[in-house]
Length: 289
Image (cartoon, rainbow, N blue to C red; front, side, top):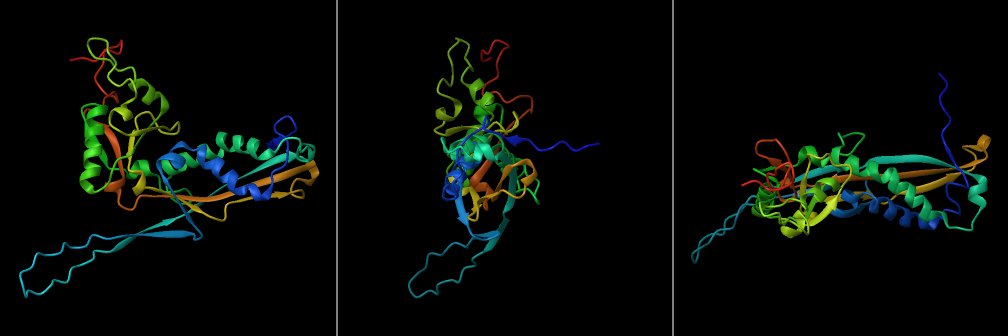
């Protein structure tokens, strides 16, 4: 069976020139096109292949009377080691397209990243299975249960707070978030017209790569997108010489880190496991008593 030739971007795909000094801008386009990675996680640049996030649970100090010895406490120190993972691809651009500098190619290349690489970045940090992918956060997130989404969300905010974190973002599939705006009471009034997240003081993040049943609450200052700072966009006229094309190679190394999960993440879980509504509803969308 003949392997099909890779598609070549032509002048009809996008035009202009990708300038090497705009690599940082291309990286920003990649992460901005990944809603979870770019919004719900705090960027953590590094020049290393792995990052150690120190964790500590020191013993508490003691109240002392005059002349009493000050106790020596245990630090309870440890570290969460997170290795970055390579995300890479090659795009072929016809030399005719590359030489047409009427439009800067960076923005158009960014659109391609949002449609492909950025989607895979989000999928990887959410559901990656570890080596060569990142360790995804969905499987690791502790559950927060409730009889409906709103109750589970209350549990999540409270449990993150009890652990010492501050919940900041509600992440779900856009259709799930949109559906919550139409949840109504017995009088037909919408319970969450501004969104379920807004009702609880959280920023909503629509993440197309999340499964409909997976709804996450994140404390952004406790969860990081690790980005190795040798992100590169390289070009070669020789690699696809026979096609009269320019090869553009994109390479980035990423990981997701939440060293203290209890302070950083919760996955909402409906107690009976039947559905993910913020309130039980009739078929018409009206909340039941």
